[in-house]
Each structure stands twice: as structure tokens, then as C-alpha cells.
Image (tube, rainbow, N blue to C red; front, side, top):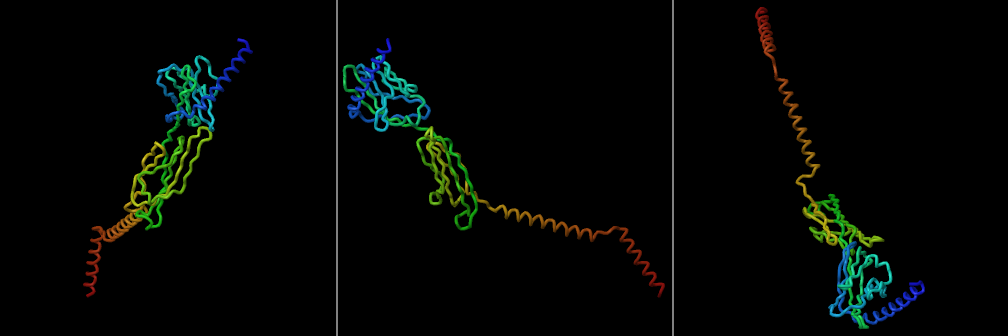
Length: 293
């Protein structure tokens, strides 16, 4: 086929496609209730256009609504090739069951799609709406405690804990849920979330202060991801400083008792030689006194 004939064929086909688009816009109000489908970020999803398969299908167009305008995604018209666009790299149409597979789904693929089915010899298409919802699981949340003692009388244990919970890579945006805590003793001091520029996935972070009333097990959840469980507000029968002071006093008392016992024992101990010498000295003095008399 010469270049001139190719250009003529492309022009005629483009004109036919434009006319078809106008018909689609006119028929878009005849669609039934929208079909909802879900896809996991980075995975594949299949768009199935409703049909009773009782009549032969001549054309199938799947288009996405972007800024209130329809954008052609993929489809078929008898055995002709469709105009190329960036979606054809990730999409594949099945003419037998009137479906389209989309691979490597991204957050930007989320939204409303329209499916147009043209039966042979029929001008007005059958229109159906398909709403694609994209989800991505958050990473396992990280929970970090920081507990300190405060003035007695503020709570039952005299202790408060700052608890931080964070997770990344999820979609759509979600909130943090805490389990095991008394809401009346909880105060949110920091709440932050941000969407990644490219992937559009979210990073969520929250820090709360919890005034302890008793020992408790706590965990946090973001979306469907749950953190490990930690124990906070642990009570001690004796503070560490008190235990150290008692130990020091006991050691000092034992040393003092040992010194006193050793001193008494050493002062009272005598040998037999010392005792006989004392007796001899006493007898000699007695005899000297008798002679002088």
C-alpha cells in the first residue's frame, strides 16, 4: 500500500472514530448502574463489559472519564487495529468475552470507565459504567513507646507514655486506630500524613500521650495492617532507687556487725602461757610480802 493510500485510510478511520465518539457521548446517558471493581496496586485487573452474547458484536470501546472528558483506552472494530495510545502497552482486549485486562495497575488508573458495545447493524451502543478502585496495603505499623514518671496524683501510677505509630506505602489515605487504651486518658499531640509524588501512596504517622491508670497492652492499626502488641504503664512494687538504698543499708549493717564481733573476739582471746605467767607473778609477790613480815 502506498503512503498516499495509507494516509487516506488513516484519515477516513480517524473520521469514523470521531463520529463514533459523538454517538458514544449521546448514548452515555443510557448506562445502567455502575459496576465496581477493585485492583491491588501493581497487579492486574479485568474489565468485563456486560453482554448477553445473544447478538454478534461489531465494535467494543472502553474509555475513561478524565476531567469530564472521555479518553479512549482500548477496544476493537471488526478486524481493524485501534489507534495507538499509552494504555495499549498495559491493556489487552479479549473479543470472545468482551473484556479488557489492565496490567501493572497504578493509582492514576483509578476512576470511572465506560464500556460501549455495538452489535452488528445497530447504531446505538449498549453502555455500561465501571468504577475502578485501587488499593495498596500499608506496611506493618511501627509502634514506639516513651514512658516517664510525673508528679504523683496525676494518675494512678504516676506515669505517662508518648506512643508513636507509623506505616508507609498504603492507599487510599487511612487513619490510625489504637486498641487497648482508654480514650479519656489519650491526647493526640502529633498527626502527619503525606502522599508520594510518583506512586501516590501514603505515609501515616501519629503520636499520642497516654496517662497511665494501670498496666495495659496496646497496639495500633492502619488500614488492614496491625502492629505488634506492647505493654506499657508497668507498675513496680518498689522503685529502683529504694531497692538500691535498702541494699546499701543492709551491706553497711553487716559490715558493722562483723567489725564489732571481731573486735570483741580478739580482745578476749588468751593463750595458756599467758595464764601460767600471771599465776607465777602472783605467787612471787605473795612470798615477798611474807618475808617482809
